[in-house]
Every structure is written in structure tokens, then in C-alpha cells.
Length: 133
Image (cartoon, rainbow, N blue to C red; front, side):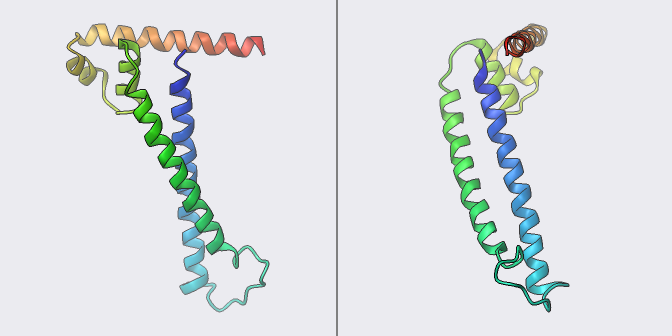
């Protein structure tokens, strides 16, 4: 139930991690090329010498994950039912519960209550799954 939300969040976490690694590696490369380490001689097998390869590998992996996210969003947008719409609008589109209520033509209190029920069901299902392991 709603495992798609957990899968989507995993993809988002992966992308955030890759973006962080890319930023850090790019900063490190800049230090070697034009910064405080530019006069240091690198051994061929050192981490510094392999930075450009690492950056390229991270960029490729990031592109793959971003494509995966886009495809996942296309899939999720096809899901029917209020619960799926609510979760998509809240956790993927980043809308507030009030905005969702307006978008779906429901009262704010109904959407808030529905969201609380869904979250409770997800937590309960998660607890049951982990207790069986």
C-alpha cells in the first residue's frame, strides 16, 4: 500500500546525495586546478587524479536517477483515487493541505482528516511489515 511513495522518496534521496557528491567533487577539483593545491604533483593512482572521472560518473548516475524520477512521476500521475491524488499533490508536487483541498474541491478539514488517516495507515502497515521480519 502506497509503496510508490517510499520508492519516490528513495529516488529523491538518491538524487540529493548525488547532487551533494557532485558539488563536493567539483569543489575539490577546483582546488586542484586553480586553488591551493594546484602546485601539488599528483600520483597517477591518487584520488585527486581520478576526480574528473568520478565527476563524470556521478553526472551520468545523476542523469539516470533524474530520468527515473521523471518516469516515476508520469506513472504516479496515472494513479486514480483520492488517497493517491492527495499523496501525490502533497509529497511530490509540494502542495499544502489547504491548496490540495482547493484543487480537489474538498473542505480543508476533510483533506486534513483524510491525510491523517492515510499517514496512520502507512505507519501501521510499516510497523506490521517490520514486526514480521
